[in-house]
Image (cartoon, rainbow, N blue to C red; front, side, top):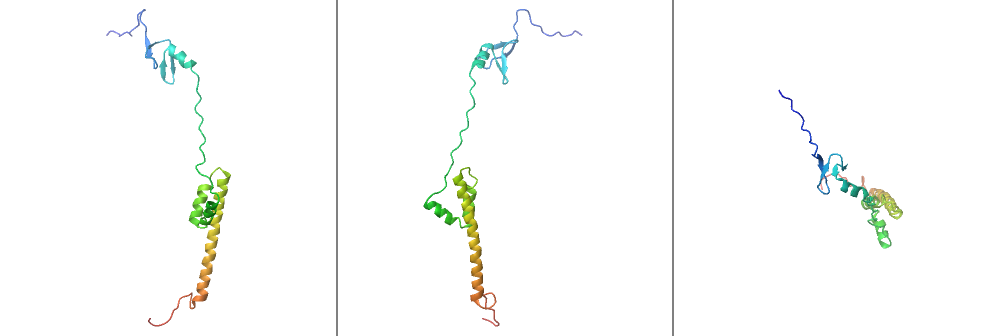
Amino acid sequence: MAKKSAKRSTPGEIRYRAVCTNCGTFIPVNSGLTKDGKNYCDPCCTAIQQAPIVPPPVPVQPQVPFTAPSGALKVLCYILSLSPMIGFLLGVIYFPQNDPALKKFGRNAFIMMGVGIFLAIIFFIIVLAAGAALGGGVSGANFGEGYY
């Protein structure tokens, strides 16, 4: 059986390895540039290498989406913070912020929430004691015999 020989180039034949990504010309075997997986011919290669390098854009620091309340709104928020749910929500929203005024407002909302819980417990104890003292009978309920 005859052995197949590899196809060899003739002396006048030019072999190409790829096509330029920019201009579409054929790139000979021993020239051009491959950059980032793309092939470029010699003229496009020099244009790419001489192009100024543009730094990536610097991310802009976002503005603070909100500010701490002031004046009458601040007083109203502190009064509403006596409710544990509202105090907790205001504290969770404002305390993690980087701005010191927002952080202080959030901390104060947490404090007012604690004061509200303390006042609720004291009020519950007072009402319980008043009911026991003024209600008569066993823990404020009248238990008697017979049918009513």
